[in-house]
Length: 145
Image (cartoon, rainbow, N blue to C red; front, side, top):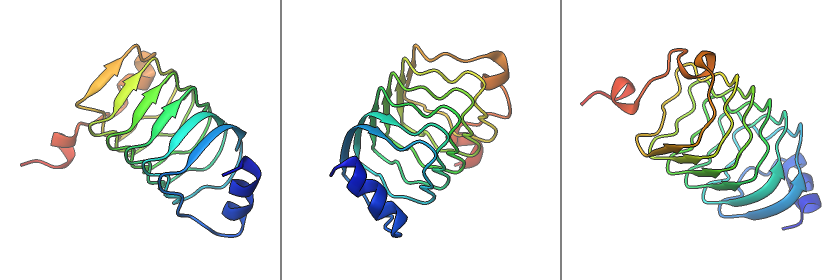
C-alpha cells in the first residue's frame, strides 16, 4: 500500500491494517488512535508526534522507525520487534511490551509509567534514570498468578 493511500484510508475512518507493509513514509502527526497494525512490517516510517494511543501493534516489526514525541498510551506491543527505533519523549504510559524484543532503541525521556516491559529482549536500549524508573511494571505485577 502506498503511503498516500494509507493516509487517505485512515482519514476515512479505516482502522484495520493488520499485516500491512509500509516503508519510507511520513505519517508524522497522524491520528491513529486504536489502529490495528498487528503483524505489520514498518521500515523507515516517521510517526513523529502521531497519536497511536490504544493501537494494536502485536507482533509488529519496527525497523528504523521514528516515534519521537508520539502517543502510544495503552498501546499493545506484545511480541513486537523493535530495532533502531527512536522513541525519545514518547508517551508509553500503560503500554504493553510483554515478550517484545527491543534492540538499539532510544527511550530517552519516554514516559513509561505503568508500562509492562518485556520479559524478552532489551539490548542496546538507551534509557535515562528518569525514563527507566517511573512506576515501571512487569507482567507479573499486573497479572499475578
